[in-house]
Image (tube, rainbow, N blue to C red; front, top):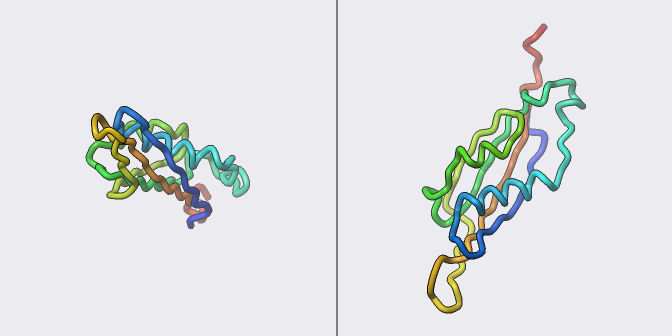
Length: 115
């Protein structure tokens, strides 16, 4: 059962780094909350099912393993799709400013299997 959804935005201003923009978007979403639901329902934190959806203009340039490494616990899965924005430099030279959006949903299997 999904219990929480949070949103975040991250950027890479000069390097055109889609992974870093995505990491920052995920951290932005996470830092909006202190997620204490596991304890509230009597579950270990590792029982959290975390669905991470990221939107950037070039999804194939996001390292999903680097996004997974942001989470200290839980069972995260990462999906990267077309979205976000690339903002061209005013002089037309160099990397664009990359804007990534993230949505994080936290769910639990609410039926206990430990008896």
